[in-house]
Image (cartoon, rainbow, N blue to C red; front, side, top):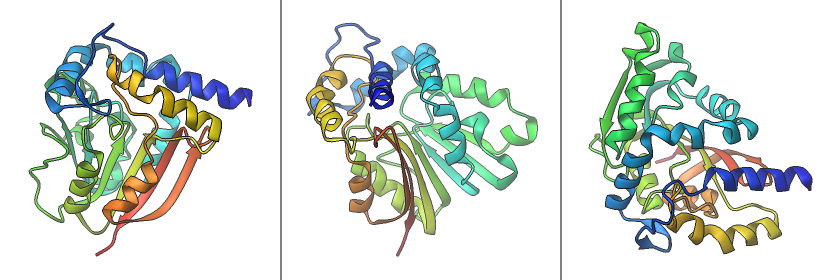
Length: 244
């Protein structure tokens, strides 16, 4: 129980307000694109303290990210690449190309810095673009893998993002997700339900942390290959296949 409560508090800490008192518009706590872009442009230079700082380390997020990303190979798309926290963790010997997209130019500027620290042979495979993940400009059936980490809880329409992931994946291509999700523990799940809109609406990452990642993925048409729960499902790793 102590371990579960600790995980809950740490995840809550990751969602703490970083723009004090700023209420963000949107439907059910989810921000419109213009608000989301503004928020992430404003916090870009400090974002790594949220998703890559002490709380993230205590939750073991770097190891969880690396485990997920080890699956990626061939032509890879990372949605909401952000400040590029994942970029040092890919196994580039298995990757032909890596496209990273994000709505925020401020976040992408930080991702470029991380890209440029990689060995020349690895960074040559990476291309970063400002783009809305719910309206991708890529052709159908373009990628072997699509990666998403900790952005579905933020985007205005997560199903639209997953539909785009499905569209741009090649037949048999795979979706890799590491995401906040509603706990399988009834008490913690209720706590998430009560606090989700408050945490989302007032600054911080604006993350809806009680979404059902599994149902979202299945509703778009993906076949679930595996799900790994961390902290009674507060965090979930998901691998799913595009079947057509």
